[in-house]
Image (cartoon, rainbow, N blue to C red; front, side, top):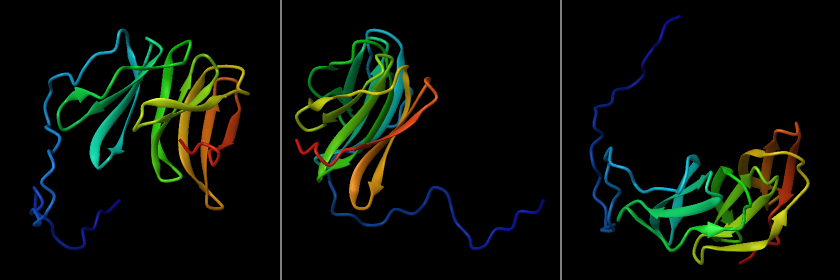
Length: 162
């Protein structure tokens, strides 16, 4: 197999001028924070223009971390009754949300600005929700989930307006 490189690049890439003076995430090997137990899921996104990490763990919570300040945003989000093993960050009707899946067989949508649940838990899986993705189908926000029950489900998120 041959690899052909077209063009040239240097590392690190040159910095372009920017008017953005907001704090930037610090790259470090130090822990960002802790859950009360094992962490099983991580996603990154933005809330009000700030970089965040959203985590889920065996302590049944979802947590939001400001990556620039390295501080938690508010209290842990609760509602799952078992391990949170899947997290994705997306947008629903222009609002930043996290969609989570857990060993309680539910899918939940969280408003990342208020850090409150949106709507009722989505049910239908009969075993742990292992994976979650978000996207658009016919201009409607959807979550797609996969479970240990062997099913893949598509959930319409358009009703979750915050």
